[in-house]
Length: 123
Image 1 (cartoon, rainbow, N blue to C red):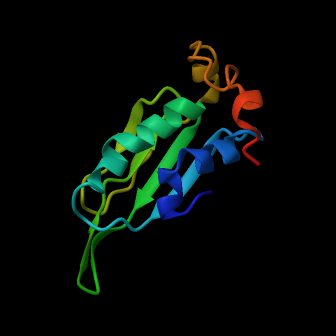
Image 2 (spheres, rainbow, N blue to C red; image 1 turned 90 degrees about the horizontal axis):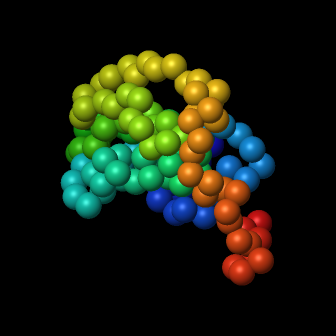
């Protein structure tokens, strides 16, 4: 699990992925507006793709104490495919997460082609 802003840093996601989980869940409360809407519209799929992981991004929606929230929860697959996406209102996202489907798909070898000897260990 990561919390909110953490998912916006590639290193945070990669550090969680290296030990081998197949899913990361990210609860967040992202205020409405640009450029923050880019997090759920493109960044989540990118993090899922570059790390070959299911990424579940659950964002607050509506308004709380005068602050409007983005909504836009998303579930992304290890190949970056959007499996489910919410709008700006309360939504229950349901989808099937089948890791076997993506292992058989021959994903780009991002994790295998890493070269930590150049930049050091992330831990």
